[in-house]
Image: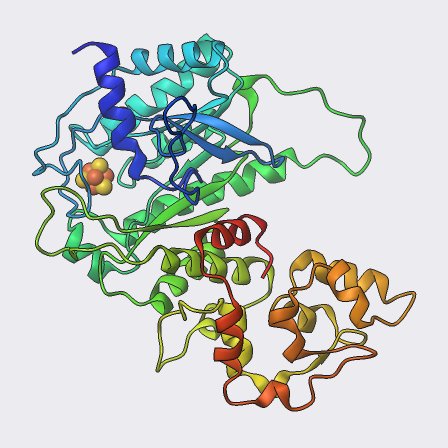
Length: 426
Ligand code: SF4
Protein backbone atom coordinates (compact mmCIF):
# COMPACT_ATOMS: atom_id res chain seq x y z
CA UNK A 1 0.00 0.00 0.00
CA UNK A 2 1.51 3.36 -0.95
CA UNK A 3 1.69 6.32 1.39
CA UNK A 4 -1.22 8.14 -0.28
CA UNK A 5 -3.54 5.21 0.37
CA UNK A 6 -2.34 4.96 3.96
CA UNK A 7 -2.88 8.68 4.37
CA UNK A 8 -6.42 8.51 3.09
CA UNK A 9 -7.29 5.63 5.48
CA UNK A 10 -5.49 6.92 8.56
CA UNK A 11 -6.48 10.57 8.25
CA UNK A 12 -10.10 9.49 7.80
CA UNK A 13 -9.85 7.16 10.81
CA UNK A 14 -8.61 10.03 12.99
CA UNK A 15 -11.64 12.22 12.35
CA UNK A 16 -13.66 10.67 15.19
CA UNK A 17 -11.40 12.19 17.82
CA UNK A 18 -12.72 15.60 18.85
CA UNK A 19 -10.09 16.33 21.45
CA UNK A 20 -7.94 18.44 19.17
CA UNK A 21 -10.71 21.05 19.10
CA UNK A 22 -11.60 20.64 15.44
CA UNK A 23 -15.24 19.91 16.26
CA UNK A 24 -17.95 22.54 16.41
CA UNK A 25 -17.53 23.75 12.87
CA UNK A 26 -20.60 23.56 10.71
CA UNK A 27 -20.29 20.88 8.02
CA UNK A 28 -19.91 22.64 4.68
CA UNK A 29 -18.57 21.83 1.24
CA UNK A 30 -18.01 24.25 -1.58
CA UNK A 31 -20.33 23.88 -4.58
CA UNK A 32 -19.22 23.40 -8.18
CA UNK A 33 -16.42 25.80 -9.03
CA UNK A 34 -15.92 26.67 -5.36
CA UNK A 35 -13.06 25.85 -3.10
CA UNK A 36 -12.71 24.63 0.51
CA UNK A 37 -14.54 22.36 2.90
CA UNK A 38 -14.99 22.13 6.64
CA UNK A 39 -15.76 18.40 6.45
CA UNK A 40 -12.51 17.29 4.88
CA UNK A 41 -10.15 14.93 6.62
CA UNK A 42 -6.55 15.19 7.60
CA UNK A 43 -6.29 18.74 8.89
CA UNK A 44 -7.83 20.08 12.08
CA UNK A 45 -7.42 23.22 14.15
CA UNK A 46 -6.28 23.73 17.67
CA UNK A 47 -5.35 26.61 19.97
CA UNK A 48 -1.86 27.13 21.33
CA UNK A 49 -1.32 28.38 24.90
CA UNK A 50 -0.93 31.93 23.57
CA UNK A 51 -4.34 31.73 21.88
CA UNK A 52 -3.22 31.28 18.27
CA UNK A 53 -5.32 28.97 16.09
CA UNK A 54 -3.06 26.48 14.32
CA UNK A 55 -3.74 23.89 11.60
CA UNK A 56 -2.69 20.38 12.51
CA UNK A 57 -2.09 17.28 10.44
CA UNK A 58 -4.46 14.85 12.16
CA UNK A 59 -3.49 11.20 11.80
CA UNK A 60 -3.61 7.77 13.32
CA UNK A 61 -0.31 5.93 13.31
CA UNK A 62 -2.41 2.84 12.62
CA UNK A 63 -6.04 1.81 12.72
CA UNK A 64 -5.19 -1.76 13.66
CA UNK A 65 -6.26 -2.28 17.26
CA UNK A 66 -6.23 -5.18 19.69
CA UNK A 67 -9.09 -3.62 21.71
CA UNK A 68 -12.74 -3.95 20.86
CA UNK A 69 -14.46 -0.75 22.01
CA UNK A 70 -18.00 -1.06 20.67
CA UNK A 71 -18.31 2.63 19.68
CA UNK A 72 -15.08 2.66 17.63
CA UNK A 73 -14.81 2.11 13.89
CA UNK A 74 -11.28 0.77 14.40
CA UNK A 75 -12.16 -1.90 16.97
CA UNK A 76 -10.70 -5.37 16.55
CA UNK A 77 -13.95 -6.86 15.25
CA UNK A 78 -14.63 -4.11 12.70
CA UNK A 79 -14.34 -4.93 9.02
CA UNK A 80 -12.77 -1.56 8.22
CA UNK A 81 -9.81 -1.37 5.81
CA UNK A 82 -6.56 -1.25 7.81
CA UNK A 83 -3.29 0.55 7.32
CA UNK A 84 -0.19 1.36 9.31
CA UNK A 85 2.40 4.10 9.05
CA UNK A 86 5.92 3.69 10.27
CA UNK A 87 7.10 6.49 12.57
CA UNK A 88 9.36 7.64 9.72
CA UNK A 89 6.33 7.92 7.40
CA UNK A 90 4.62 10.27 9.85
CA UNK A 91 7.78 12.33 10.36
CA UNK A 92 8.17 12.69 6.60
CA UNK A 93 4.52 13.62 6.06
CA UNK A 94 4.61 16.19 8.85
CA UNK A 95 7.72 17.86 7.48
CA UNK A 96 6.42 17.84 3.89
CA UNK A 97 3.05 19.31 4.87
CA UNK A 98 4.81 21.85 7.06
CA UNK A 99 7.21 22.93 4.31
CA UNK A 100 4.26 23.44 1.97
CA UNK A 101 2.66 25.63 4.61
CA UNK A 102 -0.44 23.38 4.91
CA UNK A 103 -0.01 22.80 8.64
CA UNK A 104 1.64 24.21 11.73
CA UNK A 105 1.70 21.01 13.73
CA UNK A 106 0.71 17.38 14.23
CA UNK A 107 -2.08 15.61 16.11
CA UNK A 108 -1.14 11.95 16.40
CA UNK A 109 -3.22 9.13 17.83
CA UNK A 110 -3.11 5.39 17.29
CA UNK A 111 -4.94 2.12 17.63
CA UNK A 112 -3.19 -0.22 20.02
CA UNK A 113 -0.83 -2.59 18.29
CA UNK A 114 0.86 -5.47 20.10
CA UNK A 115 0.52 -3.76 23.51
CA UNK A 116 0.21 -0.32 25.08
CA UNK A 117 3.95 0.19 25.64
CA UNK A 118 4.95 -0.81 22.11
CA UNK A 119 2.35 1.56 20.65
CA UNK A 120 3.35 4.39 22.95
CA UNK A 121 7.01 3.96 22.01
CA UNK A 122 6.12 4.27 18.33
CA UNK A 123 4.06 7.43 18.94
CA UNK A 124 6.84 8.97 21.05
CA UNK A 125 9.42 8.11 18.43
CA UNK A 126 7.59 10.33 15.90
CA UNK A 127 7.64 13.35 18.21
CA UNK A 128 11.18 12.76 19.42
CA UNK A 129 12.53 12.43 15.87
CA UNK A 130 10.70 15.57 14.77
CA UNK A 131 12.12 17.56 17.67
CA UNK A 132 15.66 16.21 17.92
CA UNK A 133 16.59 15.16 14.38
CA UNK A 134 14.72 17.84 12.47
CA UNK A 135 14.51 20.65 15.03
CA UNK A 136 10.74 20.79 14.45
CA UNK A 137 9.31 23.68 16.46
CA UNK A 138 5.65 23.25 15.42
CA UNK A 139 2.80 22.22 17.69
CA UNK A 140 2.54 18.52 18.59
CA UNK A 141 -0.46 16.93 20.30
CA UNK A 142 0.03 13.26 21.21
CA UNK A 143 -2.75 10.93 22.23
CA UNK A 144 -1.47 8.88 25.13
CA UNK A 145 -2.24 5.20 25.62
CA UNK A 146 -3.70 4.87 29.13
CA UNK A 147 -2.09 1.53 30.00
CA UNK A 148 1.39 2.57 28.90
CA UNK A 149 4.19 2.57 31.45
CA UNK A 150 4.59 5.76 33.47
CA UNK A 151 8.12 6.28 32.12
CA UNK A 152 6.74 6.36 28.58
CA UNK A 153 4.01 8.81 29.52
CA UNK A 154 6.67 10.96 31.17
CA UNK A 155 8.77 10.87 28.05
CA UNK A 156 5.86 11.75 25.71
CA UNK A 157 5.40 15.09 27.45
CA UNK A 158 9.02 16.09 26.82
CA UNK A 159 8.35 16.26 23.09
CA UNK A 160 4.64 17.18 22.89
CA UNK A 161 2.95 20.52 23.49
CA UNK A 162 -0.22 18.79 24.60
CA UNK A 163 -1.04 15.28 25.76
CA UNK A 164 -4.45 13.73 26.00
CA UNK A 165 -5.89 10.49 27.25
CA UNK A 166 -9.48 9.84 26.30
CA UNK A 167 -11.67 8.94 29.24
CA UNK A 168 -14.25 7.97 26.57
CA UNK A 169 -17.22 7.30 28.90
CA UNK A 170 -18.17 8.85 32.22
CA UNK A 171 -18.38 5.75 34.44
CA UNK A 172 -16.72 2.37 34.79
CA UNK A 173 -20.13 0.76 34.31
CA UNK A 174 -20.33 2.42 30.88
CA UNK A 175 -16.80 1.30 30.05
CA UNK A 176 -17.59 -2.25 31.16
CA UNK A 177 -20.52 -2.26 28.76
CA UNK A 178 -18.78 -0.78 25.72
CA UNK A 179 -15.01 -0.81 26.26
CA UNK A 180 -14.34 -3.70 28.65
CA UNK A 181 -10.55 -3.51 28.25
CA UNK A 182 -10.48 0.04 29.65
CA UNK A 183 -10.38 0.98 33.31
CA UNK A 184 -11.21 4.39 34.70
CA UNK A 185 -8.75 3.97 37.56
CA UNK A 186 -5.92 3.26 35.11
CA UNK A 187 -6.92 6.24 32.96
CA UNK A 188 -6.95 8.49 36.04
CA UNK A 189 -3.60 7.12 37.18
CA UNK A 190 -2.00 7.97 33.82
CA UNK A 191 -3.62 11.40 33.85
CA UNK A 192 -2.14 11.86 37.32
CA UNK A 193 1.37 11.13 35.99
CA UNK A 194 0.91 13.85 33.35
CA UNK A 195 -0.60 16.27 35.90
CA UNK A 196 2.35 15.84 38.28
CA UNK A 197 4.92 16.29 35.51
CA UNK A 198 3.17 19.44 34.27
CA UNK A 199 2.96 20.87 37.78
CA UNK A 200 6.63 20.17 38.43
CA UNK A 201 7.74 21.59 35.08
CA UNK A 202 5.71 24.76 35.64
CA UNK A 203 7.19 25.26 39.08
CA UNK A 204 10.70 24.90 37.65
CA UNK A 205 9.96 27.18 34.74
CA UNK A 206 8.43 29.96 36.78
CA UNK A 207 10.81 32.91 36.35
CA UNK A 208 12.01 34.94 39.33
CA UNK A 209 9.99 38.13 39.95
CA UNK A 210 12.40 40.35 38.01
CA UNK A 211 14.15 38.83 35.01
CA UNK A 212 15.24 40.02 31.64
CA UNK A 213 13.22 38.67 28.73
CA UNK A 214 14.11 35.03 28.08
CA UNK A 215 15.34 33.82 24.69
CA UNK A 216 12.93 31.49 22.79
CA UNK A 217 13.44 27.83 23.67
CA UNK A 218 14.83 25.26 21.29
CA UNK A 219 12.24 22.68 20.13
CA UNK A 220 13.83 20.01 22.31
CA UNK A 221 13.63 22.20 25.44
CA UNK A 222 9.92 22.86 25.55
CA UNK A 223 9.34 21.84 29.13
CA UNK A 224 6.69 19.23 29.87
CA UNK A 225 3.50 19.42 27.74
CA UNK A 226 3.27 23.23 28.00
CA UNK A 227 -0.25 23.25 26.49
CA UNK A 228 -1.50 20.92 29.24
CA UNK A 229 -3.60 17.80 28.98
CA UNK A 230 -7.08 17.21 27.62
CA UNK A 231 -9.58 14.39 27.26
CA UNK A 232 -12.66 13.43 25.31
CA UNK A 233 -15.96 11.96 26.47
CA UNK A 234 -18.44 10.38 24.11
CA UNK A 235 -22.00 11.56 24.67
CA UNK A 236 -25.08 9.49 23.91
CA UNK A 237 -23.47 6.06 23.46
CA UNK A 238 -24.91 4.99 26.83
CA UNK A 239 -27.83 6.34 28.80
CA UNK A 240 -25.55 8.25 31.24
CA UNK A 241 -27.35 11.55 31.88
CA UNK A 242 -25.71 14.96 31.63
CA UNK A 243 -25.49 15.15 35.44
CA UNK A 244 -23.10 12.17 35.43
CA UNK A 245 -21.13 13.47 32.44
CA UNK A 246 -20.69 16.90 34.04
CA UNK A 247 -19.79 15.32 37.39
CA UNK A 248 -17.01 13.33 35.72
CA UNK A 249 -15.80 16.38 33.79
CA UNK A 250 -15.75 18.45 36.97
CA UNK A 251 -13.80 15.76 38.85
CA UNK A 252 -11.25 15.64 36.03
CA UNK A 253 -10.79 19.42 35.99
CA UNK A 254 -10.25 19.45 39.73
CA UNK A 255 -8.37 16.22 40.29
CA UNK A 256 -6.30 16.02 37.13
CA UNK A 257 -6.07 19.75 36.34
CA UNK A 258 -7.16 19.15 32.74
CA UNK A 259 -7.04 22.06 30.34
CA UNK A 260 -10.11 20.86 28.40
CA UNK A 261 -12.74 18.15 28.40
CA UNK A 262 -14.15 17.68 24.91
CA UNK A 263 -17.60 16.23 24.40
CA UNK A 264 -18.19 14.26 21.26
CA UNK A 265 -21.73 13.30 20.32
CA UNK A 266 -21.74 9.59 19.56
CA UNK A 267 -22.02 8.99 15.84
CA UNK A 268 -23.40 5.67 14.66
CA UNK A 269 -20.71 3.73 12.83
CA UNK A 270 -21.06 1.17 10.05
CA UNK A 271 -21.48 -2.40 11.24
CA UNK A 272 -22.18 -1.18 14.78
CA UNK A 273 -22.64 -3.39 17.82
CA UNK A 274 -26.26 -3.98 18.85
CA UNK A 275 -25.42 -2.54 22.29
CA UNK A 276 -25.22 0.93 20.73
CA UNK A 277 -28.10 3.29 20.04
CA UNK A 278 -29.15 3.37 16.38
CA UNK A 279 -29.22 7.14 16.17
CA UNK A 280 -26.91 9.93 17.24
CA UNK A 281 -27.96 12.26 20.08
CA UNK A 282 -29.02 15.73 18.92
CA UNK A 283 -26.07 18.02 18.23
CA UNK A 284 -27.61 20.56 20.57
CA UNK A 285 -26.95 18.20 23.51
CA UNK A 286 -23.21 18.39 22.83
CA UNK A 287 -23.55 22.16 22.64
CA UNK A 288 -25.41 22.41 25.96
CA UNK A 289 -22.70 20.32 27.60
CA UNK A 290 -20.03 22.70 26.28
CA UNK A 291 -22.03 25.62 27.68
CA UNK A 292 -22.31 23.87 31.05
CA UNK A 293 -18.58 23.12 30.95
CA UNK A 294 -17.94 26.81 30.28
CA UNK A 295 -20.10 27.74 33.29
CA UNK A 296 -18.04 25.45 35.52
CA UNK A 297 -14.69 26.76 34.27
CA UNK A 298 -15.34 30.49 34.00
CA UNK A 299 -18.57 31.40 35.79
CA UNK A 300 -18.15 29.73 39.17
CA UNK A 301 -20.90 27.12 38.78
CA UNK A 302 -20.60 23.67 40.34
CA UNK A 303 -21.70 20.62 38.34
CA UNK A 304 -24.61 19.68 40.67
CA UNK A 305 -26.15 23.16 40.22
CA UNK A 306 -26.62 22.64 36.49
CA UNK A 307 -29.08 19.77 36.64
CA UNK A 308 -31.51 18.45 39.25
CA UNK A 309 -32.18 15.03 40.72
CA UNK A 310 -35.59 15.03 39.05
CA UNK A 311 -34.26 16.23 35.67
CA UNK A 312 -30.66 15.02 35.30
CA UNK A 313 -30.30 16.18 31.70
CA UNK A 314 -29.71 19.74 30.51
CA UNK A 315 -32.65 21.55 28.97
CA UNK A 316 -32.12 21.46 25.20
CA UNK A 317 -34.36 24.48 24.51
CA UNK A 318 -32.55 27.03 26.67
CA UNK A 319 -28.98 27.52 27.81
CA UNK A 320 -27.95 26.05 31.19
CA UNK A 321 -27.40 29.42 32.86
CA UNK A 322 -30.91 30.56 32.00
CA UNK A 323 -32.28 27.18 33.14
CA UNK A 324 -30.47 27.63 36.49
CA UNK A 325 -31.80 31.19 36.89
CA UNK A 326 -35.37 30.03 36.25
CA UNK A 327 -34.97 27.42 39.00
CA UNK A 328 -33.51 30.00 41.38
CA UNK A 329 -35.70 33.05 40.87
CA UNK A 330 -35.44 34.00 44.53
CA UNK A 331 -31.86 35.17 43.75
CA UNK A 332 -33.12 37.71 41.21
CA UNK A 333 -33.45 40.46 40.16
CA UNK A 334 -29.79 41.45 40.52
CA UNK A 335 -28.87 45.14 40.57
CA UNK A 336 -26.12 45.72 37.99
CA UNK A 337 -25.09 48.85 39.89
CA UNK A 338 -24.51 47.04 43.18
CA UNK A 339 -23.96 43.29 42.74
CA UNK A 340 -20.55 41.71 43.18
CA UNK A 341 -18.71 39.87 40.43
CA UNK A 342 -19.96 36.42 41.50
CA UNK A 343 -23.59 37.53 41.34
CA UNK A 344 -23.14 39.29 38.01
CA UNK A 345 -21.62 36.16 36.45
CA UNK A 346 -24.81 34.25 37.25
CA UNK A 347 -27.15 36.54 35.32
CA UNK A 348 -28.42 34.99 32.07
CA UNK A 349 -27.16 36.79 28.98
CA UNK A 350 -24.29 38.49 30.81
CA UNK A 351 -20.92 37.09 29.76
CA UNK A 352 -17.53 37.28 31.46
CA UNK A 353 -16.40 40.22 29.33
CA UNK A 354 -19.66 42.05 30.00
CA UNK A 355 -19.14 41.59 33.73
CA UNK A 356 -15.69 43.16 33.47
CA UNK A 357 -17.15 46.09 31.53
CA UNK A 358 -19.98 46.52 34.07
CA UNK A 359 -17.51 46.63 36.95
CA UNK A 360 -15.38 49.13 35.11
CA UNK A 361 -18.14 51.50 33.91
CA UNK A 362 -20.04 51.65 37.18
CA UNK A 363 -17.04 53.04 39.02
CA UNK A 364 -17.80 56.31 37.25
CA UNK A 365 -21.56 56.34 36.88
CA UNK A 366 -24.85 54.50 37.29
CA UNK A 367 -25.69 51.99 34.55
CA UNK A 368 -28.90 52.64 32.58
CA UNK A 369 -30.88 50.76 29.93
CA UNK A 370 -29.08 52.60 27.13
CA UNK A 371 -25.76 51.10 28.32
CA UNK A 372 -26.82 47.47 28.11
CA UNK A 373 -26.42 46.95 24.37
CA UNK A 374 -23.02 48.62 24.41
CA UNK A 375 -22.03 46.24 27.21
CA UNK A 376 -22.98 43.32 24.90
CA UNK A 377 -25.67 42.08 27.25
CA UNK A 378 -28.31 39.81 25.70
CA UNK A 379 -31.47 41.77 26.52
CA UNK A 380 -33.84 38.89 25.71
CA UNK A 381 -32.34 36.77 28.44
CA UNK A 382 -31.13 39.38 30.91
CA UNK A 383 -34.01 41.88 31.29
CA UNK A 384 -36.27 39.70 33.47
CA UNK A 385 -33.36 39.21 35.88
CA UNK A 386 -31.74 42.63 36.27
CA UNK A 387 -32.26 46.06 37.76
CA UNK A 388 -30.53 49.20 36.42
CA UNK A 389 -31.14 52.87 37.23
CA UNK A 390 -34.15 53.15 34.89
CA UNK A 391 -35.34 49.50 34.67
CA UNK A 392 -36.83 46.98 37.04
CA UNK A 393 -38.51 43.74 35.88
CA UNK A 394 -41.10 44.11 38.67
CA UNK A 395 -43.20 40.92 38.58
CA UNK A 396 -41.68 39.63 35.32
CA UNK A 397 -39.02 37.57 37.13
CA UNK A 398 -41.75 35.45 38.70
CA UNK A 399 -44.25 34.99 35.88
CA UNK A 400 -45.11 31.33 35.39
CA UNK A 401 -44.50 31.19 31.63
CA UNK A 402 -41.16 33.07 31.65
CA UNK A 403 -39.27 30.04 30.33
CA UNK A 404 -41.48 29.67 27.28
CA UNK A 405 -41.50 33.43 26.65
CA UNK A 406 -37.69 33.46 26.50
CA UNK A 407 -37.32 30.07 24.79
CA UNK A 408 -39.64 31.23 22.00
CA UNK A 409 -37.27 34.09 21.31
CA UNK A 410 -34.05 32.07 21.58
CA UNK A 411 -32.46 30.90 18.39
CA UNK A 412 -31.71 27.25 18.12
CA UNK A 413 -30.24 27.43 14.65
CA UNK A 414 -26.80 25.99 14.23
CA UNK A 415 -25.23 29.32 13.35
CA UNK A 416 -26.27 30.83 16.68
CA UNK A 417 -25.07 27.71 18.50
CA UNK A 418 -21.67 27.72 16.83
CA UNK A 419 -21.20 31.45 17.36
CA UNK A 420 -22.04 31.37 21.06
CA UNK A 421 -19.89 28.26 21.58
CA UNK A 422 -16.91 30.09 20.13
CA UNK A 423 -17.41 33.24 22.17
CA UNK A 424 -18.17 31.37 25.38
CA UNK A 425 -20.37 34.25 26.54
CA UNK A 426 -23.52 33.03 28.29
S1 SF4 B 1 -8.52 1.41 21.99
FE1 SF4 B 1 -8.94 3.23 20.78
S2 SF4 B 1 -8.62 2.61 18.66
FE2 SF4 B 1 -8.77 0.74 19.85
S3 SF4 B 1 -10.93 0.13 19.71
FE3 SF4 B 1 -10.71 1.36 21.58
S4 SF4 B 1 -11.19 3.48 20.97
FE4 SF4 B 1 -10.77 2.27 19.08
